[in-house]
Image (cartoon, rainbow, N blue to C red; front, side, top):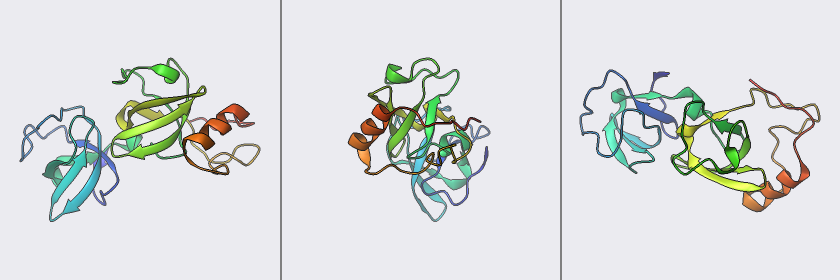
Length: 164
């Protein structure tokens, strides 16, 4: 992880050396990972799963590189050692899915013909490159949103996978 800069839209957590944030913890915990909503004059607002619009200082945060790479279109799995707060559902075990929607720290993943709801800090990307053998990985299929994602799932996996 690295100190936060250029923060808006980034996945962050409170730095380990911060014992008490300037404006207190609120419902946020040491392990919380959220997405920055706004930065102004050294102050920041973060949407954490436990608390929306948490107020803190820029220097209290660091980017979580793994959660920061959870974006729409990414192929993801549940991070090792994590227990999804909304249950395992279609991402149980080593199952993967495609991120189809991200709002703040909340994410929707299409997997195994179902939708999985969770948080960015619970996931990690499983693909390190964007070019499958058929040239379609990383390229949005026609249409967007949940119906298009379900159609892509019905078509099956791409011809090749790019794993980290």
